[in-house]
Length: 413
Length: 116
Image (cartoon, rainbow over all chains, first blue to last red; front, side, top):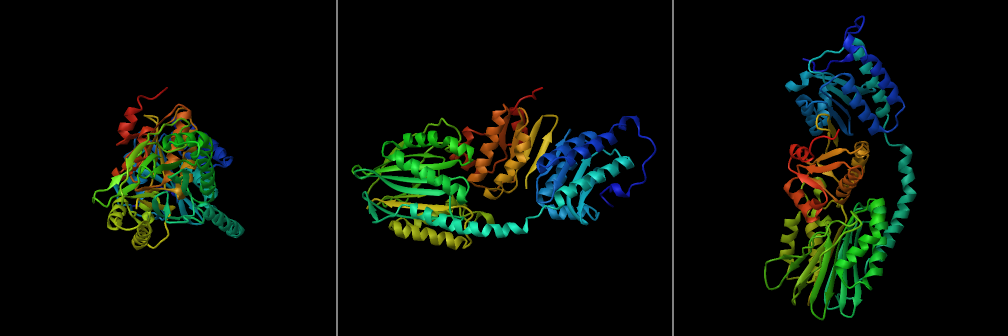
């Protein structure tokens, strides 16, 4: 049995409309005129589904364009339409293939829906669906629906990337490589593996040519080292530019602000406006190691908790810091914590790109696997730990990561 | 793929996320949500029951939508988070800025009766 009630195949219109439907056709025609003048695709889809559901007095209506958003309007909850929406979400292509050309859908719900395929060059590119509660449409109402579907096909069918856009990206690519060199030059050089009484190693791999991770090592006083890790929302040049702004602000503030919590608060106050306007929220972890007292004082804002490995015990500790993402609000407070580090203690700071590595192909590298990897490496020196983590990530999947990855390892000799 | 479901009886608009909300589709979510959040006092529920992966861009998009909704005195909630993603939200203290519920029904009830 066909599940589609194709408007184009229905009998000719009956003479005269029933009184309760007198306004349906003019309303459909008005809607057709309205969408002709609309350029915003999302607004158009929403207008169509909202208005059609009301005009047709449907229980609920749905509009989807392949590869895009599904819009549904429920005047009352419609199980058949919810079911269709779920099928489209799970398998868009095969569900659409069963609608056009009409085939038997293996579920009882589809029989209760009016399905209007949106066709572009004889190919189905979308679908209108309505739960009419078994009410049948008149022939001219169906014809008008077909016209609306054709309008949608014309609006969405010709969407395809311009062939010239690929050529335009070539010179930009060169500029991005220049930007990558600049960004790399801004990362802290570790001239000696021993800074302020710590052995240090680090690596940072941007997912794009330039990245949104930022790490830094800043000498903030005699025998005091500031360790900064930040993960800026997004990647690529916009995140990298914001990262450089964050770097400058951090450098400026570290020398006048001895407290990590106050430093985070000041950074948030200064950069909140820029972060909000450019939608660049960011996480940050800032710690100061005092070599005289072997104390680490730290504060964080939504950042992955660093891991402390100890030579004395197999138990791991996490540097929990409970601030919220920076940039959400102009007024945020952060707590400060301190721990004493013993000889042989290693602290591993990282961004969530490590955890997310490989997640585009299924489950990511994950926190548990990362911790197990660190446990195996806990007796090693920072350089060997960094190498070990890189190898573990590569062994998990050699494909490039979709997020920036940064790991900084410090060890008390 | 996202879907937007409007419930006329409760006045709630549900934005259903797909499996991933990352850099690749965060802007698409914002464009999709633009019409919803521009209403007066919208009641927006983001359903994350299918979501298995989210990155900082995805979180940024959710926070941006939430901020836009609150600017017009609307209500915003996220429902159906998997335990691991819920844990990440907790780690980032997002539960302090975003209302999180188990189901759409609970979120709708918590939003109270519809404003006229």
